[in-house]
Length: 247
Ligand SMILES: [Fe+2]
Image (cartoon, rainbow, N blue to C red; front, side, top):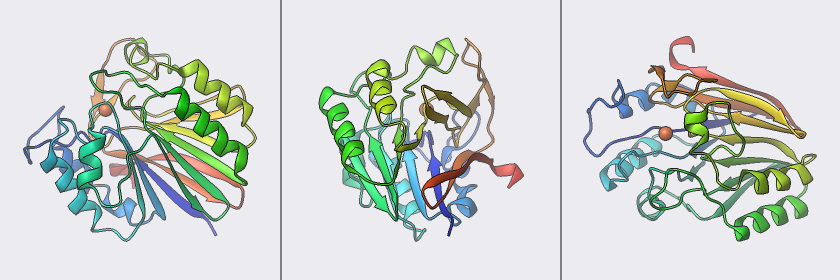
């Protein structure tokens, strides 16, 4: 049986509802993806759920999520407050590293949020825990985090990537046989590459997309989007982005 994992990223919800932001209303954008969420067996939010770290925006998201009968993992982005996420979102453990096991698969969520910086940060302790998890487990793993652990050929956003890219790439490379893919948000556009035997995937935003392979930060539109990952047995079957207007 195929298992459908849905990655949702960069919703940038605001304290004041119905307010247009970067060209669209954030909660309306997310609501347009409801029918896709209903198809998923598991949902993972990879950060920047909320733009202003406001309690009321997380409360809106909690109410929206409660409308679905699906397990959800929440991972913080640079705009988020892990503390408020844990207070307001159902079942949220925005800890440094979280794991969810389903069938032969292991989904690992890494927190790369660091207060007062746009860039991502993972500690030595997180890298050791990640290494340990990949060493001990069986079956395949998918790793999720907000900040890109590889450069995506866009200097503007690459200046704000994960600060420990080389260190985390080494861990991934050691365990490349176990890793089905590394999935991140933050860049607001589709991205895919293989590097040193590991497949990396960037997720578009639900609110607005940016131009890839471009040194300037250019917003290209507001098609709400997310990434679907289809798994079967012990291998990644497919990973593709779904845009609201073409579903
Ligand atoms: Fe974002």
